[in-house]
Image (cartoon, rainbow, N blue to C red; front, side, top):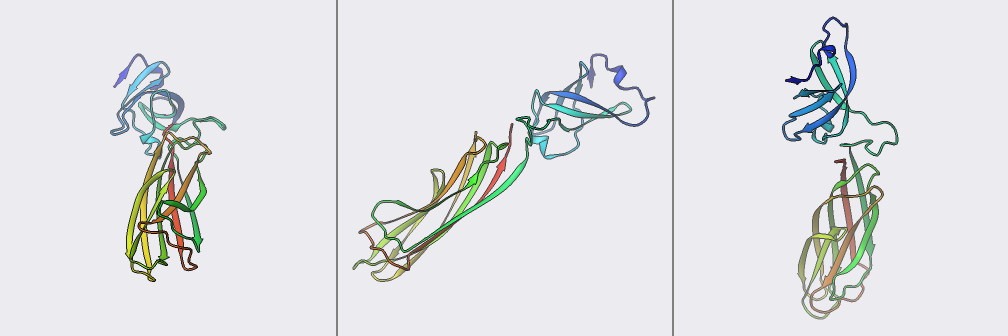
Length: 223
């Protein structure tokens, strides 16, 4: 459906395709329904060349338009170099890890391993981070006791578990955590962490105690 007089844009006598810039007036990210300002008129429900930007277009975005005869297509956003909207709707990946050996356990949850390798790209404002880890510890006390282990990202400690270990034995624990962040800023650091504690008495240091944590991050832009 077309409103206003756009007859000059649909000259079927012109050979080949035509290129213009349009401005998104409205966009439904679920269905792709849209309205676009083109040369002062409004196009409704313009088809789009299917790209990753389809879920991120919104009112005010400038888009490239290709016309052929009486048909127009949205081919994607127009962003010059150094524009703050560069790479909108892009996706990138990151990974991080850390390890520590020969630690002691106290009766408080204490940070043992961490990494600051996950740095948000300049263009991203959302991230999903999956953290997994494993630890082992020797119960160096004279009685049966339990110890706990948890992993997380930037205070999102959603993954924890514990195990009971008899005196002198070694326990093994695994934990995972999923974390979603929105409203991020480019350059922000997402710290992954591994923490542990004993639940009864403190466990003195043992050379066999170890902890490994690993993370995978997916960054996205919704600008």
